[in-house]
Image (cartoon, rainbow, N blue to C red; front, side):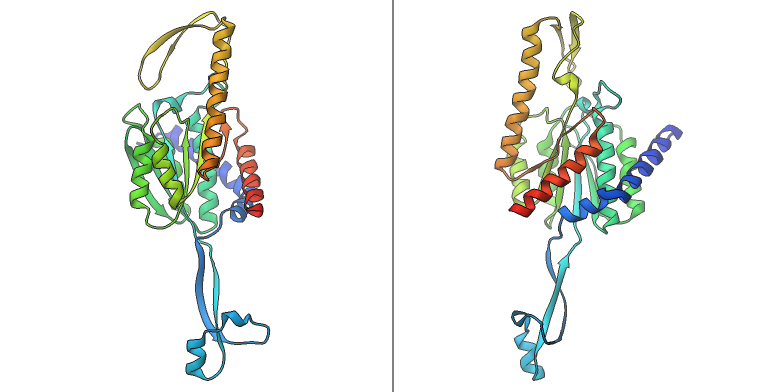
Length: 294
C-alpha cells in the first residue's frame, strides 16, 4: 500500500536524483562504466584510409573487391543493485538512516543507467532474497525500482549476503555491473563475493554511521543488536571502551579495503553524514584514474 507520505518521498527522491544525473554525474557514469565489448555492425566496401586488418576476406573473395567489417562498442550494460535491507540498515544517528542513504545512491545509479539506455535490476536481501526485480530499461522501470526501495517492508531482521550473491551468480547469464550495498555486519559472504567478482564487474558499497566509531559520553548505556535483539550494558565514559570501538571499526575497514583490492572489487565508501553525492562523484573519479592506468 502506497501512502501519501511514501509517494511524496519517492517523488522527492526521484526529482532530486534526476537533477543530479542531468549534471556532471551522468557523464561521469558513462565514462567509467563501459559496455560488454565490441559488437558487429555492418560489412561495407573498403575505402582509402580504412584499417587493412578490418578487411573481410570471405566477402572480398565473393565480391571481387575489398570489403571491411565495421564494429561498434557494445555500450549497453546490465546493472544490478544488491541491497541489504536487514534491521541494522535502519540504524542512523544523523539526518538519515543507512537504508535511506543507500536508497538515494541507488536512485542516482538507476537514473544514470536508464539515461544511458542500460538495463537495471534490484535484489533486496535479509536472511534470504526477499525481492528480485529483473533488469529492464526505461524511466517507468526506474521509478518502480525507486518506489520498491521505500515500499518494501523486510520480513526478516538478519543478514545473509551469501544468499543474495549466490542467487545473482546463478541467474545472471551475461557479464553485469553489480553494486553490493550493505554495512557488511555479516560473515561468510567472502567466497560468494569472490565468485561474483570473477564473472561480473563488482562494486562494494559499505555504509557507515559515526556512532559506530564513537558513542557520546553518557555514562552507562544499554545497547541492543537490531538483528538479534541481544542487549548489552556499556560504560560510555570508559576511555578504553571508546578506543576499542574506534579501533575495531577502523581495523575492519582497513582489512575490508585490502580484501576488496586483492580480489579486484571496486569500493564506494559512504556514510550517513550526508555527503553521499560527493562520495559517488569521488568514486567515479577514482575509478576513471584506475582504468586509465590499468
